[in-house]
Length: 87
Image (cartoon, rainbow, N blue to C red):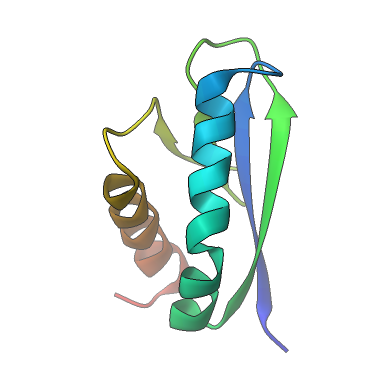
């Protein structure tokens, strides 16, 4: 059974940046799941800040919007390596 990891994107409802980060996460979901042998659950929650914050199992990973999807992947992988003890 694979470990479930929840990635939460917090930002204002209907916010372009929240949508963008969530979309990028959905695009890389299968890659991350295979690489770490986890089940990635992506959720969105309403927040007040202009720019989204990304959490992994409640731990803040980043706030703001990276210039490209690749940067988001790297930030997420660095966190997961530490969090899951893979690096």
